[in-house]
Length: 360
Ligand SMILES: Nc1nc2c(c(=O)[nH]1)N[C@H]1C(S)=C(S)[C@@H](COP(=O)(O)O)O[C@H]1N2
Ligand SMILES: [Mo]
Image (cartoon, helix red, strand yellow):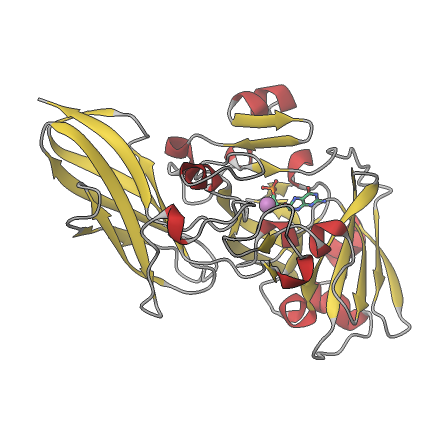
């Protein structure tokens, strides 16, 4: 295994403490399942150093049953489940919103996303053992070991999503134990939801009749209208970001690249939670005309991204490449960041545009 400093050297680091980093887009597009070292890291506090031997998960089902599970219990008392799913930060592509007006938070390019084969126990299996039955209007609140501004990290998901077969407490990523920065020894994986709802370094979970009151859940990761500012934001009015919207990005060529005139390969990803991508349009002239890309999707992986590629015949000059995807509901993406700007810079889903130069 590479050391942490070797792993950091593979990524574009936005900050060391907390540690936030994303892969160069060409490397992200190199494999359908993102190797752990190339997987973006989003952390709000420290990266805890946990001992797998003494690690325990406390589960309070809210109906009088509590469990204390070791890593061995998770591996042996529950059927092993494997889900290939994309994880994406709600701030992915935030950098593109700065063209409209300033936004708060790290300027993520299109690399705050990755896809892995996650292995673990189904959260639903654990909750059923803790006496939980499917019920409306309940929430599973997670608490983690990392400290964020003096409090443990915490977030919640609706019980219905917690009981869904795709939702895991994962102890492995692409067949190997989680790396420390990805939540070792155990993290939640909530496919289709924003990454913030997949807590790493789990310590405790509680079933309750209200969402987590942790500031991560109650204050952050809310989508506000464009006229709201940090000063006027009323958290009760913000939409809690759970399900992620349709999005797509060009990974190759990279921004500012110089290409040779003639046929060039353009490649990237598209994603829409559990909704299938049915079409990806790519433009070599900023969206005046479009060509359809070839789509590549892994079977039996409804929560995983679609890779796309297209050959464009490019004449010499300065060009703007653009991409937009279409999902199974026939919906596509807004053209401009102006259409979706919000002061937190969340859910940047406008056409992804890449400027390139083409020479003779
Ligand atoms: N305990 C804990 N869990 C966490 C976070 C965190 O800071 N602490 N960050 C969340 C956010 S915002 C995202 S996008 C994903 C990122 O997961 P990754 O770093 O493995 O890519 O983890 C989520 N889980
Ligand atoms: Mo995130």
